[in-house]
Length: 395
Image: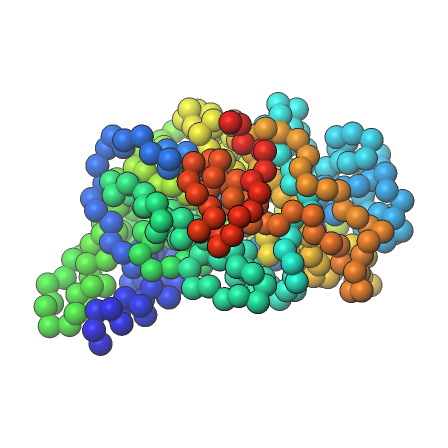
């Protein structure tokens, strides 16, 4: 096996080495040095995947539309419980922790996110979102991987990105991306101490693996979990991810993006209680992240964005849940966000033959906003076309 073939093979694997859930992507990074010079990537992107597909209609609620309660006689959230924005739109009551962000005009909500010819398979649709592809197109590299290929992060950065709480690289998948995957910062440090550089010159593939593991040691040497925050992080799985993300930012080792994952949104049955619990975790986690980033003086230079593979069907099913749907609503927040409602409210009187919503905003416009407005780069080559950026980032 030659080196090129080996790299092509390991670049497609979710994990590298055998460090108990710690991964380093195929391209080794240089040893980190600080301070980091000014770069577009001084602005951090935090992605939060709502895995399983969150129900947008019970998240950002068109409570005044009579069709909402007609379609959901059991699942509709009562008017006297919703968190009202105006006379038409409200938030799920479990999202109370997001209301201060809304009132401070630091929370943008993009409604009607989707894409043409939607695919309702979890696996294929999240692949479309991760790669920013057309519905019928298959791309090898994630959209963030293509960003970093066109405009590399500084070599002194610890990584291009860090994936917390998942071994799936998602939008960071691709050859040459310097990505660390870890479940917990302290665990990462403990495991990294186990990695030792080897000297076996006879096996080129083994030599490369050992060299990559050696780079984990170099990266770990610049990351620690010693920051003491005043912020109280939620005591749950997602809260632990948020705490890890805050510790990563506190290191100042340099990274362009961090991705978190909150799972459990595939609510085919028993949706009311499940979604309420998940949305509460999401809101309280985002609130804690804002608090920690404010302590670090990084709130204004961080953009937090949720995404998922699709939404849920407007009509409830017979199991007290909702089936796979199309368009949905997602959140963007940060100190440089222009808060407000973007896109279009769900058109409940224009459902397609399968009972699904038409989309109003192509999800690639969200990515174009990150690339063009947040990082000041050119999205047209990366996204293979021109998608209109939205106005939720301050000029």
